[in-house]
Length: 166
Image 1 (cartoon, rainbow, N blue to C red):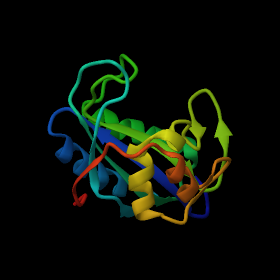
Image 2 (image 1 turned 30 degrees about the horizontal axis):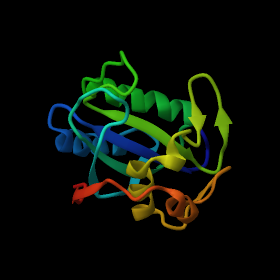
Image 3 (image 1 turned 180 degrees about the vertical axis):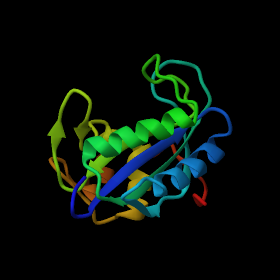
Image 4 (image 1 turned 90 degrees about the horizontal axis):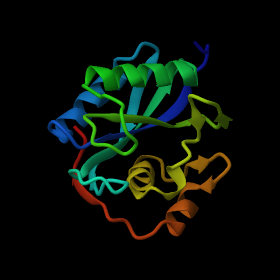
């Protein structure tokens, strides 16, 4: 555990078992992590799934948390929340009750077997960039530049805002 707070950003996604309820429940669970406080969250957005598998649309959001946990400790907590929501990992880009991605951890850059921050898919995923911009428009992504610049390069979004998160 760190002695000082670090601002981290978490991407949330769900396309099974009442996705809006799953995201709202996950936001509550994020705020309940010891040493962590949810300080902002985006609206909910509907997006098309990645990959070729036929599946329902996703509901996505992004949350900002201030945490005393290390990046690895926070990732472990995210995996516990996913499991509590019925997440089972079998195939890449499969339907899921809940997907929590650690997008950013302060201004750190780290690439390891279990964790890479910033999240490698962040720069080209509209379902991450637009909710992230909603809560942190001036954000700088380590190694990738300003969030505004990334959004300018992103294809037009195929997102549909569906509601405020809570």
